[in-house]
Length: 217
Image 1 (tube, rainbow, N blue to C red):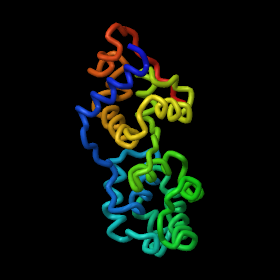
Image 2: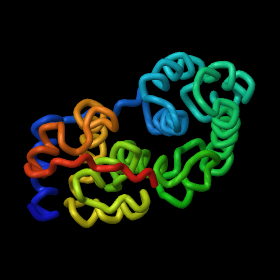
Image 3: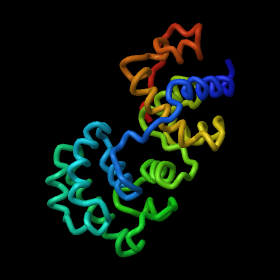
Image 4: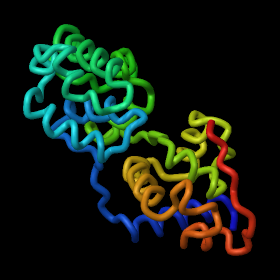
């Protein structure tokens, strides 16, 4: 099966599994989504959701989050990894959004990526899921499966993003981002499948017998 054929099969199967995938992070709007994504670095969505339920009861707008203060934010997110840096970043970015962007989350990559704690992946998630701009954020699951499914060589997340954008129609990027994440968690995890176990891996590579080593780029 050639690469484009594999891509077509993947998209068809994922649409069957997850026809309407929901954003897994608890949020109310574009600002709370931004905060949730910043908090999700090196943390599970489940853990982040446990924290944000309480955090967003105290602050749901940039003004409220900035007024909450770095110390209070840290107290509420302490159980998450990198909590001190995340509290600092959230407090600072909230102030910047209030002062520089008139309390509105910017809707372009340059301004989003200028915010503390916001890298390209975080900006891509917000642009895709909050503003509907076609992007293809690459997280650990997507990077692993793109390599496992022979869609990218795994050399870097930057290369994986470029390869996936070439293979899949632009109109499907935002949905596929969520679908691949869900499939990676539920059916083709790093430990649960080695490229020969799950239904989709077997369909894509029926003759594969040796495990696929994951390159952590």
